Length: 336
Image 1 (cartoon, rainbow, N blue to C red):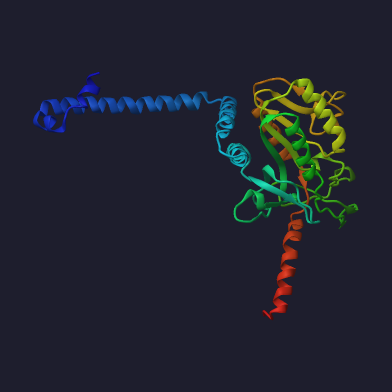
Image 2: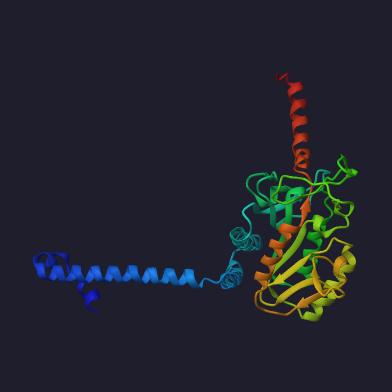
């Protein structure tokens, strides 16, 4: 109390009372030392007791609050944009540095384009990004450099679930350019590489790149939802209906519902989780309310390191056509 009162004394009075000034300075010095000591103690405590799981759970709770705050935006488009940016910011902090996080559409070199995706995880170092006016609606990512895509929903109901399946199918139908390579030990093979690496490999026959039949060679599709607006039974029935309609290997791979649980695939014989219905043969709905965002992050980190793509030379297909166009323009106007 004395320190707080003394620091309120006018400067003129202090200058006229040397003893009082000395007392104030002494108290101020002790207060400053105490403050520095307290900061150091807090810092040491933080370093000794930091829990990454608690930190991620805190982010998840913050994410849930921001889902709610975003709903105060004035239009549906602004609401969606606010939520997407919040998720993007969180993912950028927690995923490997070579992974870029953005929004936009996915394209292939055969002229196909997906629907607009809220979240796009791509290779920051190798994947070209074609962006018009810095707008997500006109930002395009070659599918060979895309690791995963996601949809962000404040609530999950039958309408939003259908929208998730529809958008994910538009991504799954894109074709990565994979042509047989000649030479090597086997003569003809389909090379592959890991995301974040420039090196392509020739493997055994069962290691050939195969987007149509191997989930590890596909773009991973997920959805992040704030809460469940329908009953568990309705969710299960609708999810099963969507699976039957969507076609093999075109489904969403994982759904995280922050205030409810997760939807994933399960292999009963091996008693483990899988990333698609083909490898699992069943799907399950977990009603655990905690750690759902943490589980999504763990899944994404695993996907980043186990999924595969094709040679980086494939990106030239997206640039070469433009180069040919420039050559043609140059000929017409006689540019040397």
